[in-house]
Image (cartoon, rainbow, N blue to C red; front, side, top):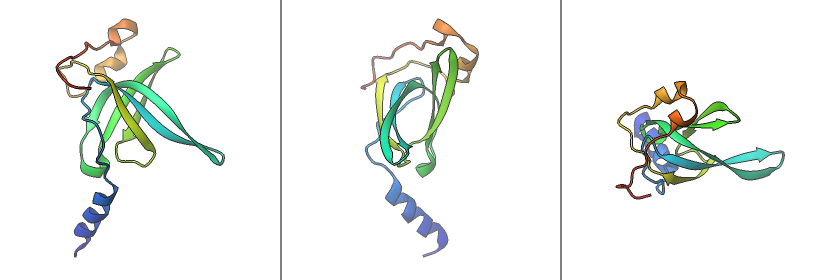
Length: 120
């Protein structure tokens, strides 16, 4: 076995199989494991998926939400052990692969139309 085959086999062990089908524009709730002192708890983070990157074990989603009037974006590795759960709240109907234009919008202009033809 060469080095690339060893790396692929190690990555295959770490891949999660129970991930939902996530699309850009969806509103998701990501359960992130937070460690405070010697205790662990799950912190939910809910927002709109504005970007998605598929590349095997390095697949990521960028989730944006407005917190106290300030836009906050977090990038989550989908196969990370720190990401406990991903739940789709609402499907969004968008015509772009990346929704970076939402960064410039404020208030009701940041809303995305709901899509009803896909399962939650």
